[in-house]
Image (cartoon, rainbow, N blue to C red; front, side, top):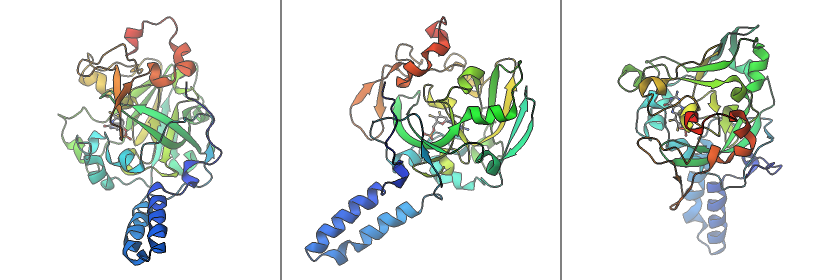
Length: 318
Ligand code: MTE
């Protein structure tokens, strides 16, 4: 499938698309004598780009990429699912500024030789930061292509030294209704948000902890300061703003399974053949495009991950 080594220039090093377009318009009009009129447009585009969180230094191209067009920064950061800040797609951008992402630490516990908290600044030193351009497919049948910045989850897990009983990994989002107002309403979800993976899935090189996108730190609405990205699974597995990682002998119960086991399975591998009770999974709408496109098994990552599920009934893999 479309998994290739990306260009040696990470997208973060490329001029912001809005500034690029505005600059060309400005130069064109300037030649015609109308430069003064367009200066505000250029400044506004620059201000929009400057409003991004700080740039991440030392990002290198990662081993996986995609040739597909990237979803715009604007769409990735304003069309979100982060129920801790509300259930409308625009709510996270409006309300997630309440979240304080420093200081931040992740408690690693359970079946590991080295349990304990790890500060985000130390987590960032575990592995070089890589750009990973991945498709993201939500179970609601929309998708995006996102240039994440992150590192393999395996680097953090190995650091904690899982023991032989560790068969599953459980992830938990911050639980603080002061900062996350959606958590005041337990009718939305049973808080805190919990997700899980089998350990071999968690150790797979495609599975990352993301700390940024488009070369900048993650905006709060996308799960700052640290979120999971598992590109072959439906987006709900990619849990945001993680504060705890627990290695377990038995499979954890995830938030969505608790809410509706008929609708949400533990595996949640993208599969056009298995429909969600409310949404057909055959086709999807790429955000920013008009025509729907076919959904690919494992979201197009079958070559990399199908072997993890050999001998299992595809129906149980939802
Ligand atoms: N993590 C937490 N803590 N809370 C959430 O509501 N939503 C999930 C996932 N991670 C969610 C979460 C869902 S349903 C999706 S599709 C993705 O985040 C969306 O990620 P994005 O907003 O960065 O596109």
